[in-house]
Image 1 (cartoon, rainbow, N blue to C red):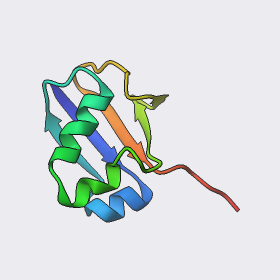
Image 2 (cartoon, rainbow, N blue to C red; image 1 turned 120 degrees about the horizontal axis):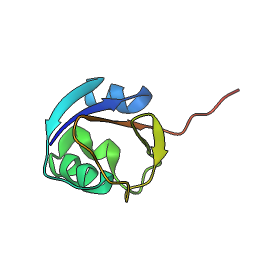
Image 3 (tube, one colour; image 1 turned 90 degrees about the horizontal axis):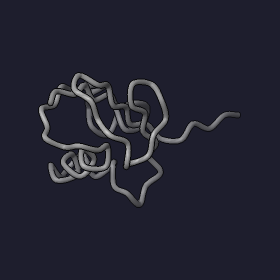
Length: 82
């Protein structure tokens, strides 16, 4: 299935891109995250020991969320204000 992946804030800076299209056979958000982590290098910013939030079609989700074709999956660090 085809997904649009978006990266925000420090994740965008670490990866050097704001979005990408991805073909995957993953069924869940967690499986996509694992696929991205397997790419190594810059994708280390998505490691599970780091605070990374995820949204599927602009709704906050956890790694068990089930994907649908042509969905938008966004990764971003927790927002802080001041």
